[in-house]
Image (cartoon, rainbow, N blue to C red):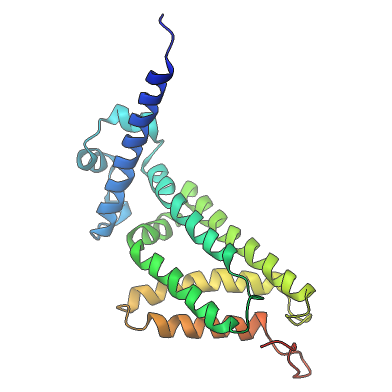
Length: 218
C-alpha cells in the first residue's frame, strides 16, 4: 500500500475541517431561524448540510456533539473576555464592569439560537448537560480567583464568602442574562448591563464592611 503523503494528509484534514464547518454552520442557521434543537433531526441536518450519513458519523457522534462543538468556540471567546477583565485596573470599576456586560450581552444576542439550544438540551441530554455545567464552572473558577485576589489585596472585604459569591455571580448572572434577552428587544441592554454591573460590583467586589466602612477603594 502506498504511504500517505503529507499533501494527501493535508488535503484530507482540509476536507474534514470543511465538513465540520458545513455541518456546524448549518445547525446554527437552523437554530437562528427559530427551529428548536429538539425538532432538528439528524436527517434534517444531513439534508440541509448536503452531507451523507456516513460522512456525518465520521466526524460527529450525534447531533448533540455538533451542538457542543459549535458552542465550544463561543465558550472560549466569552471565557477569554472574562479573564481579561481586571477589577483593579483604574478607578471606574463599575463603569468598566457595565461595558464588559454590554459586550457579553451583545455576544449572547448574536448567538441566541445556539445558547438557547444548549440550555434546552442540557435538561435532557447528559453530554450537553455536562458541557453546560463545565462551561459555567469554568466561569465560576475564574471569578473565584479574581475575588480571592481582590481580597488578598484588601480591595474586597474579608467577610465576603468568595465561594458563595462566585457561584451566585456566575450562575445567577447566566439566568438573568438569558431571561433579559428573551423578554427585551435590546433597547434596554445598556441599562440592564449597568444595573447588573453595580449589583455585582458593590455587592461583592467593593462591598462595604459589616461596620459600614468601605474597603478604601471605589
